[in-house]
Image (tube, rainbow, N blue to C red; front, side, top):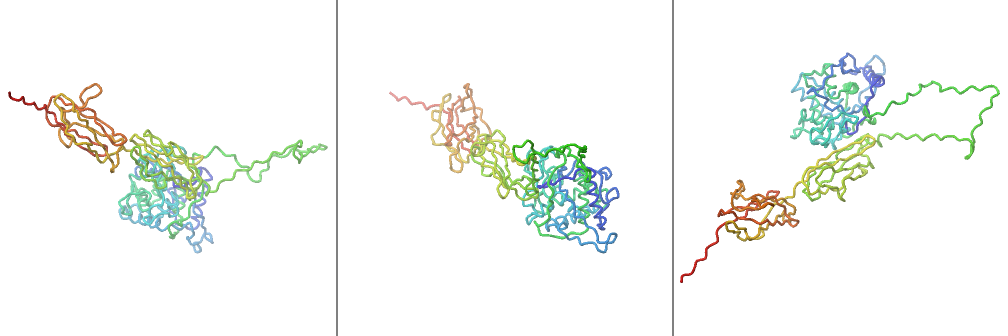
Length: 570
């Protein structure tokens, strides 16, 4: 669910025992943990807690994405049963980055003003922020509280995760195919659209801003008239965020830990979770059950009296016996070597005019399981669509490896000749791939000016053809505008508001009159109109030509009978 996803606790007795042990230790240290709905300070079952689905009662805020499962350190007093010698809660794990802590406290104060009956504790927001994003990757935010790079969960494409198709056109998560959890509190776009807040007063509701996200999380947790001082309501609120019993237990553990005490640390210096990411549902088949320690293996066959001992195999190559070498075990990669996430590296809007190169290049950044940049990761970029757009060199698919800073830039895109929308996907990671999808647009060629190449008066007799051709040139920023669409229309007024149904006309392939034509300039921006004919109605008429881009020019057409030549008197 964060940009660096961590391993979920597997369901079963082992998970329960670990979580219960952690909470029990916290309880033994006199931590002021609020009891769960079942009366205990650990565990928690969705049914027992009366699980619901949050504000809108229609699903989890995070789309039930993966989350960090690291538990807080176990803290016990020196003397069991006594609180006089409790250690101070001031270790590295209890440090919360300054901006992140300020955002949680501000959210608590704001909600206390607008919804005092909820009794939202900021420590609950801190617990969720720890589990969702490791406190915004240890407080990697700017002066306004916005993450230095987007925190995106994996594509919710149904492959090991929930299936949630795109709801925001990629506006929040950069993915126009599937939704992803976004920001330090990991909202899915559809939930953010309903609950997003502008807590820092910058006029934007930004899920990547910790102040906006913390207030949104606080209001979401308080939905349905919950009183978070009540264990049952607190459990329902947490389960509405992520519908997982293990998630509830993990958040509860951090909530209790932070209630014991915290301290502020500088932004960017918070402790990051370290467990690798293995989402539930993607773990391979059952693992072999290990032999309990102390259980002997199969006993060797007993020797019979007088039996000959087996002859050991030869020690030299080429002997009659052989010894199979033991396979070298594959080393488990460290978290710093494990691929964790793929994120947008600041790619701006992708728009270009047909036939021209895109000024913006697509960039991505790969991170390891600790959230640090990861080098030498192959990233495959693919263009999909029918605009004719290709990467430089005429390729639809290219693969680029990330550099030392974890970034990889796709080659420049060359827009095709057909206007329209297309997508570019970036894929990296194995065996679990991460995918980013970028929307792009090819716009029609434009002209900001169109003029006649001569000023000849255009006159024809009724029923005859205009003998002088009409030639024009279109330009864009004073350069020839080739391939620009031009509409030629016979109109009754210079503004072209009313079409004319009489007077001059063009002819179609069957010779029938046409008073509107769609044309295109040549490579030099030139346009030669087809022949114009006059009907039997004399008068002055207007031909209006308009380009893609809004440039226009009018041409005066006169239909009149030729002047009679006077016969000289005898």
